[in-house]
Length: 394
Image: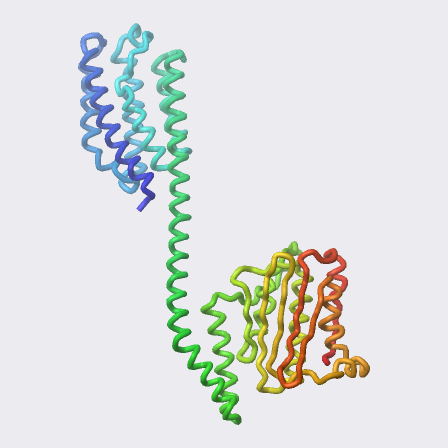
């Protein structure tokens, strides 16, 4: 079905054709005794009336109004215009008498406009204009006025129809997306109430039991994380950009998404967190370095959480774990040993970006690393130059 703005145009065209056919018949009957060949003109006007009534169904919808019908309809109108020079007297033609089809011709042109848009309307109205000029013999003021009126009106209506069809497709697409979103939300509720809870329970019980059950719990945790990402619409890693393509802002969520697993819970805004490509890569790398420390020092059963906050003036990434925490003096000792994971891989990266990295750890209560990157940082070139490899962990 087309938009509601198009179907009324077809109904209006049906009414227009009937009324103007009746008007053409009445006008000709009134001038019957003044024309040169009244019988020939009467035969054409009668044919015009029969054609109009017989083809009412053709102009009720876009599907029925075929190209063949439009061509025959326009040919009938142009034939009537040219036949006027034979049927009527030159004196009446020069005085501005109507052509045999009169204003019925405009209905034929409007059918082209509604069917094919403004381009079809321009072609049909131009053909009618040429026929009018041939019939008149010279471009008088009234002739040019009528030709221009039909030309502008038909092209305007054709353009409106094209806009209506584009709007219809856009609306249909929006309705499809809305329906798909509602269905996804419904499935997400059902999955959350059932499958996710079962997977979380399997992970918890498997970790408590140990042995082969722990491996089963780990796999259940990974599946839970993947399923949660799927139903929540979280971003998946984006494909690598082609060489030479102009860089654009990167979504930080996409860079952090690969870290999500059964042991890492990623919480991010529902909208893209856009950053300069180099800054986004460095911030994600700093978060990855913090996770490396968790796996190396917090134990196999540790769980980590990544929280992304998109504030007006800064982006915050918090990495928290439930491990044993960092003993007092450990960071200082690690730096003395030349192990600069926190100093360089985390704090160094944020310092080069113009941000800060705060670390809070209490023995027995886990560790929390807060990475804060202001929206207005150093120039892109400086950020890209600072993106050097900083290996090592605490």
